[in-house]
Length: 367
View 1 (cartoon, helix red, strand yellow):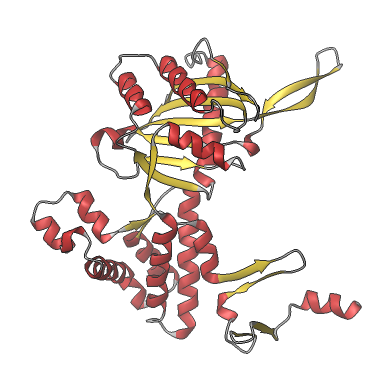
View 2 (view 1 turned 180 degrees about the vertical axis):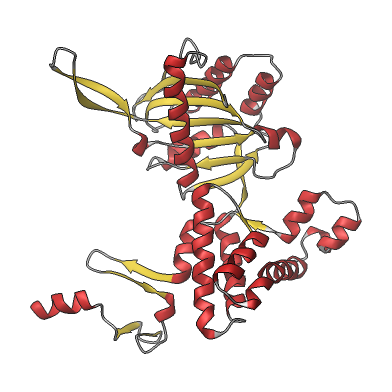
């Protein structure tokens, strides 16, 4: 069984309240009981899927100077306290940081830990509930409460194995929920989370290289290549997996059916080296020089950037232009720009569309 612990605590605070009200759970979930283990496993799986599929994610580590939560987790890992004691202390610490603020929260703090084949992982989530109506055994109606997964707040995943082995510079994933950004930033600060990866900037740099590479292909294959890259990256992101350039190159070679596509991984690595050298990163050393001087595999990999955690918003904008206001919504493929179908005049800010969808033409003629 991969799920090892599961604990929930109740937390509530109105905007004008001086402090949060915290009701701690008395016991951990009894995961050895077949009666309840299924419900906890199902809940954990659903929360993990929410975290993975969200586009709003940040990646980082524990801040070296904010040690309270980090030290508590280390005490638990060292068997100096139980998991439920750990979660009570984290919940209490977060509740204390809300004192005398105008932040509000209502719901539950859920903590669970799973042991996988390659890593141990700890999760923290803000859960919200909502009311509904249910039918009793005597066929009367009554109010009931249930977890509203569609309105889940922040979520945090800590890869304990990577953290303890000092093998990753992004062992914490912080996932933003709907609204309440100040509250979610407060929780990130309370646990000592600090960003180490700017997915937006890295995706933008990656897409610039993809665009350059697409121009080395025949004209009829360039846009197809870019579209396939975006599809692949989006799929990897939804799975919660990074984009490995070697694997992307193999995918392109099979999908685009172009011999030059096989050179994609080499092209990416060479461009990343050029950027690293021009920016004089890593003390001005090339990845090869770093390896020769005994740099760790992780440092060399970071210098070359052989993989990417993509930003979904940047991916969408790469092959489609879109925009809207209260009166107009417009979206079209980037391949249509500067063709006979769609042209943009940067001087007058005018967009000329000659190929109008048939369904829209039909509506316009009816008017």
